[in-house]
Length: 415
Image (cartoon, rainbow, N blue to C red; front, side, top):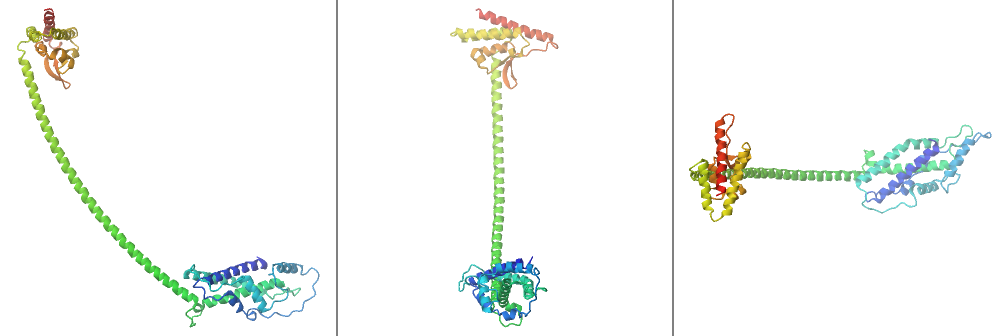
């Protein structure tokens, strides 16, 4: 980086520090800071700039200092308006420097609460750190201020560049003086001044930290208390939940026992009812069997006579019953191997409508060799076929009985 660019960077940094200083003075805690005008006025050029040596210029061949001259012309263009080519007096230089780095005005007696002591202290420390980083550059500028070209013996900087360098050095020294005063009781251990701004700020920051720590501890204690309360409530809730669950389980067991007891009572009652119904059914079956003292063709004829006598006033019903009996036995004799023809449901609506509801109707089947059985859970009149391979004679007798029954029915149909 050449001197011009480095100078511009230094000027920008100093302007930024001056702006930060002005912003600090607007805060209530920073109002005690001296104004930038006061800081610049306190700077004495004799204290910071060495006497300028007198040197007789030499004759310079054409073109020797062309490069230096161009740099000076470039620096002259960048020189602040109002600066002359001659060296400015101290008062004029300070005023011009103040205008450049301070600005049109340095606000005083304006306070607000927008910046906390911690923020003000951090801003001051940032300015101090920035000035410390500028120190090597400022020393270099100060060292080169009166350096001369070994050939032309002209100064290293042009007149306007030299003015800018001096203004930067003045601004730096002014800010350094201000920061030194602010941090006086912390840089000078033997000082009796214990009420500087930094000291007050650090005291306030410490108190604020202590207050925040107390508030934090109070908040932690509050949170701990709240946590304990929530934990206790959770424990109580869990206990209540356990108790409620145990009570619910107890009620459920009692209900299950009660249901089991009722189910057992219902089962016993159902068994009793089934037994009574079975006994009644057996009794009814026994009564029905008692009405058929004679089996075979003669028994069939007796039951048909009973039916005719009972239906003597309803010839159509008798003809329908006798015709249904004929159809039933005709199917069986035609296909004795067909089990469905030999099984008559006792509760079948058609059977009861045509035959079973009449006196002697069911008895005809019993007289013809049908038995009252339960097949696949259904109560039936069933004519069981003997095994023809094992009992040929029994099968022949059984089939002959069916044919004779059919003959009796045919005879009764034509009477």
